[in-house]
Length: 226
Image (cartoon, rainbow, N blue to C red; front, top):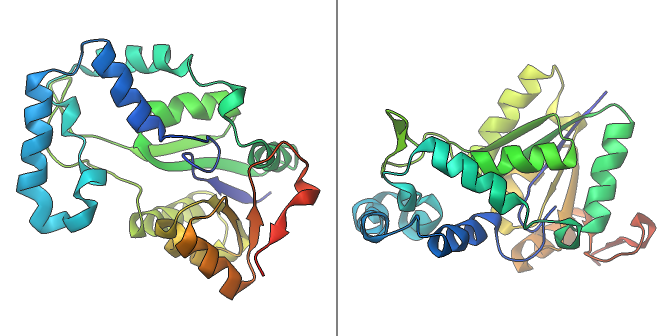
């Protein structure tokens, strides 16, 4: 058995990121108000010197003060809006193929942990690792996330997964769509670029890596970037 790692947004699920869609959902439901918006604004000011241009990706302060139970409940309702029409078909087919072979399938994403867990169940993955936000007494805080799988953080999590599942990174398959996933894809033996952005496309070209386009066609219609 092997290990296959899948990013979520832009890799398994097309369109806007699941987290941005969930923020819109929470705004429409009236759960995000002045307190959360002010906390998110202050997070940018406070943490920009540390995170620089990545501060907006690191910013989960829009959850500040919300009960864990409420967010979990809203994620379940929100999840009903994500269906097969949102899936990137060839990549879901790859995931199913890994499962059929008996490989361990892990979703590794910067999206919120409850969202990743929901999609983990939806796709039948073995484990889902997302952003674990800071929680005190059952409520989210405005502090930086305890765990945020993004850029080089994914490489550290890869090492943990390899140890957990007793495998080598050279035997791992990974699927991702962004330039920020290059450190992860560079660290595994079987990388695949999914609908890659310009930076990842250049990396794929230089490394003769496989690319999977978003279409309803079969995997045989994948192509390499030349």
